[in-house]
Structure formats: structure tokens, C-alpha cells
Length: 484
Ligand code: ADP
Ligand code: MG
View 1 (cartoon, rainbow, N blue to C red):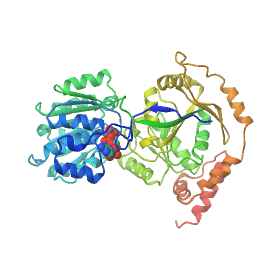
View 2 (view 1 turned 60 degrees about the vertical axis):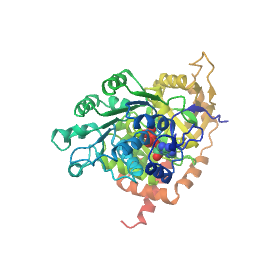
View 3 (view 1 turned 180 degrees about the horizontal axis):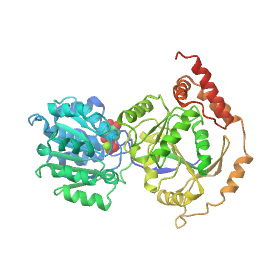
View 4 (view 1 turned 90 degrees about the vertical axis):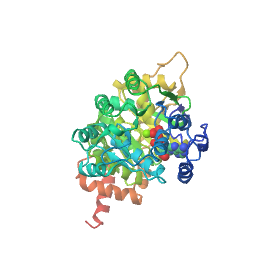
């Protein structure tokens, strides 16, 4: 018995069925942009777009409070495109618009959206991000870029060396300001803003409004319009949530069992640390599961490759830290697994929101050790739901207690008795069943060949589970049939 939990989460405003959408042609956009919107299939404006675009076209500053997936990029990109188009093209090194975002992935996504929406315009846009060679960026800036999308560190470096001049920036966008601050960029952001003219139009978007963001907003924005589309206008996604009690040493094995369940199409696994992400991914690969890690210590190219492989279905498990996964818009994620629970209960909601997007149903598993009980309580208090408890013994998953709405005034409930639950799981064990099924599925064409690719580089470290050895053997022998 599996009750579906309904949680208000974020996401996929554009594609959501149940949002109040506004016609784009009522917002003051030019016909050429309206045409592009029709071509790319944006039938109607999302709430943040509907509320921001007319104000931005009026030249107002804007404070936008909105979660990931609400369509912020087009909310600022469309006015930027419309504003800048009639202006003279950027002179070398002097962008007219600057968009700052916290991670390289986000800048790439913004650039892609600009590309898409700017199809009918002659504006040039460019990327300045760390972790890749400077020279191509320097050359691009020298040719002239109208809209520059950047992460703060590299931009400051290039500015300090005279490769970019921010004194002509007439529109400044800070995207995901709370993350910029979390990631320690606040001083860099201030230094960048100081290099732009006071007469600029400024936009700041943030999913949350802690004090630091309010302070930054008050420094940067001039009499801003405030648009708040969270959390009431959020999409309701159907995400089934389950908890498995597992101590740290058991977690990897449990994770592998979960991932081999037949309904796992594509999964994101969250770890708390970058090292954790690498370690977990490496072990998955060794177990024949096509996985890759994405986190801030990886080179830009490695991260883009990992993302692309995941999008293309080359790998089907992405192991990520919260920051690396922030804002990623990936379709078809059937499962999210929390290898550890996050410290902040809000992060849990963000994480599980990676699945169940666009009205699809998703599944979120959390591996919870005894010392994470407090975090689980905090999450259940925030979501006002009690998560279903499952056990995992070997490869046998069993439900212990179903999910339930939490009675008001009893946020903690009575959730003890992990040991009991375990023994129940053991009692109902049907060893052999699940592995058979999973192995069959996992030997499917594309995935087992992916396993080979990864397996080749992993060397054969000793696993314990018979199932793991089986799949490794299978991968090996399959690998032998392939040309080297
Ligand atoms: P955010 O920056 O708020 O996280 P994005 O701007 O990246 O969100 O948009 C999320 C997804 O929704 C993207 O895939 C984007 O192409 C799509 N999208 C945005 N606006 C619309 C719209 N009006 N109609 C349909 N899809 C949209
Ligand atoms: Mg965004």
C-alpha cells in the first residue's frame, strides 16, 4: 500500500498544467519576439514572466522571488533582448547587459535560453566561466558581446586584466542570488556591481530571501518592483517518498539495491560532500551501474560531459551535491535518492523536486542512519507528512509503515523501533526474486554496454554481494567481445 504524497514543490512552470498562465502578447513584447516564442513552443507566460516582463520593459528594477523552474530566464531574457536590440551593438570588451549566476551549469543554461529566444535578433551573447581556458573568452570579448553571462570569479579576473569593461552595462541581472551568497560570492558580486554604472537597470532573482539577500538587494536595486511567485503559485508534483534505515557502512549496498529496482529509469543521488559524490559514483560504476558524479571540484568540461551523458541516457545515475544540482533542468528523472539527508529540510524539498517534474510521478528515497533521525523529523515537520518506512535486507526491499499525513500538534510522532522494522523486513524476504528481475533488466543493450565502458576503467575491485559479482562478470565478458 503506497499512498501518494502531494507536496507543493516548485518546478516546470512552463510545462505545468495547473498554473494560471498569461498570453505573451499582452505583455508589450515585440512581434519578432512573439514569433520566436511561438516557434519555441512557449504558449503562455508563466507567473514570474507575466509579472516581470511589463515592468522590466518599463525600465523598472526588479526583485523576483521564485524557485527553480519557474521560467526566470525568459522573464529577464525577453526584456533584455527587446531593450538592447535597437541599441548600437556592443563595442569590443564592453557588454551592454550582464547576467551573473552562481554555477557554470546555470550560466550555460542561461546562454542556451538566450540562444533560443534570441533567434530573431542580431545580439551576440557570450559566456565567461571558470574552469575552462581563458583565451577563447578573451577573444570573444574582444570581438564584442552584447549580453555577457558570467560566474563572478572569472569575470573579475578578466576585468582586472583589462579584457572586459563593465562601464557600459545598462542591464544587470543577479540570478539565484541566495546561491551566489551561499557559495561565498557576495564580495565578488559587490566588486562587480561597483564597476557598472549607477544608471543601470538591475534585476535580482532569488528562491529565498534571507537577510543577506535583502541587504544585497537594497544595495543594488533602485525602487524595485517586487514579484513573488513562491510558494503559493508553485506546481504540485506527485512524489512518493520513502525512507530506508541504513547506517553509513550499509548505504552503498542499499543504494545499489534501490537503483536496480525495475522502475528506476534515471536517478539523481544526492550526497552531502563532493568527495562523497565521487566515492559513491565510483563504487556504482564498479558495480556495473552507469553512473557519474557532478560537483564543484570537477573541471567544467567533465561536468558538462557528465550532464550530457546523463541527458543522452549514456549514464542513468547522476551523483551530485546540492550546489551542483541546483537549477539543473533535466527531464525524465524517475528517482531521487538522498544518500544522506541534507542539513536543511528545505534542501530536501529542492532535491526531491528534481523528480516528478512536469506533472510526472516521481519517487524519492532517503537513506537514513540513526544519527540522522533529527533531520528526518525536521523534514517531516516541514512537509507535514510522515514518510513511508522501508527496510532493505540484502536485495529485499519491504515496506514497514506506510506514509501518512501528520496529525497536527504531533510533529514528532512515534517513529522509533528501527530494529523491529528490520526484522520484519527479514521475515518477508524473498531472496532471489528481485535480483533475477533486475539483472534481466540491467542486461538490456544500452545499459550493459555503458557498464562496460565504465567497468573497463574501474579495475575489478572486490565486491561482496553475489549479485554485484554476477553483473560485473557479465559486463566483463560482454566487454571482451567488443573491439578494444
Ligand atoms: P528557472 O530559471 O526559473 O529555474 P528556466 O528559465 O530555466 O527556469 O525555465 C525552466 C524550463 O521551463 C526551461 O526548460 C524553459 O525552457 C521552460 N520554459 C520557460 N518559460 C516557459 C514558457 N513560458 N512556456 C513553456 N516553457 C517554458
Ligand atoms: Mg534559472
